[in-house]
Picture (tube, rainbow, N blue to C red):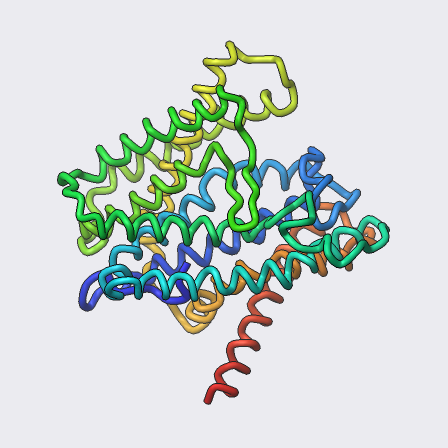
Length: 375
């Protein structure tokens, strides 16, 4: 999630990658705003604001968004990783990524996570607690929350750097077989995690991750790196038959995934076919949906959104910082909306739009102030 695009080859600048990343950050804001108003009650015990005004729409939207948003961000990061490793010799790459990812993460977990808990307690009319319980390693409920993405991305970068320095001879592989391999490995991995009963989140001081998806995300990261290696985007898009076919059919595995997942969540112990078949259906459908949506989104932005303008450039430059600060901004605005009589859907829209605008305004003002002070 770099602030600006990197050049994959002399003269090539992929604006669509910037635009795609920025759009995914907006969808992250949409997802987290939706969690305030979704009606299932899944987020209520730990979400920063629990509004009694709810709707089924945010939950449905979030179910779809959750399939592809984070994988797309990892794909984009993976695409630029080989160039960054080559550009920064030795440990320079690790130093750069540590400064870029882990320093903001450290500041955020020390400053923004405590604000999260302040909003969490205030919105529920609960008394504030001892200061020592406000940090990610001691809150016991939400841990790193939305900031989990940053350490995971850093460790993916470290692992990729180690693999590149190991000089392992990797045979030439085309993107199609690589995607098929990622589908198979990812499905078996997630199925194994589920069948072994170790599903859920691992939360530590340094890293949080969802057990079922950690390897899946790294495989998508590697697919992005492979696209760079094969110079996929240096050539004009190939014929659109495959693109159109996936656009027209990706909804099928998405529906299968949603049906099986909702049955497992809301009817525990009840299976559509059997525990084994249901879990295989769940994770194979998830993999197909995820890979299909990554392909569709990358292809769509490459074909139709490979340009930028003044506003787009500002939004792209702000995207990384918007991701970091957006949650507490959502919390503050959601608190203001608690006492209003607006329907949940209206609140949902208002919260998403105003939070995204406010985050960009804050980041833009900060960047302007920093530039003036630095100048």
